[in-house]
Image (cartoon, rainbow, N blue to C red):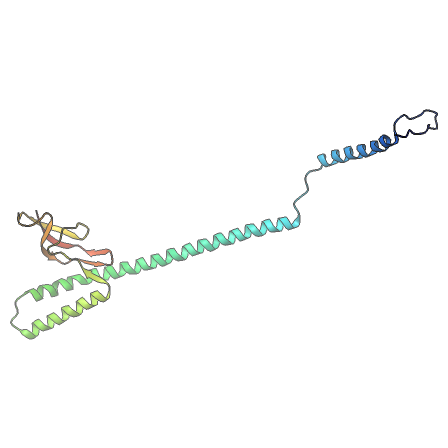
Length: 189
């Protein structure tokens, strides 16, 4: 390595030239590292802030859309349930008329025209109920089901099976899976 020349004061600098040039660079790097250590990290750029805000607003929008969809579905179910309940209540109020027509048909009648008129009225009434989705509950010679039947009388008969319905006192009706009125029945054993 080449040595430096004597200085004007007469002293010679024994350091090689390359080392002498490297010292200021090291000092600058050290000063820069001290500056960067003391400076807080830079704020996120404006674009990143916009993207973050956009993502937050998009998330809010998606949540609002989901809430509205849930509200719409819940409202639709409530309307359908309200309609079904109103229909069931209407049918329940008409059932005494059905019972009276059934009793009239069960009686002996000498007037054919009168009997035919009652029979036609009952037929039309059954069609009306069927059109509303109302179905009769089967209650003769079937096993007793407390979900559909109401036992009002019990008999012992060894010839019949366990919990078999032997007689129906009042017809029961359903709309879909909903029981409007339970069948009043007599149960064996």
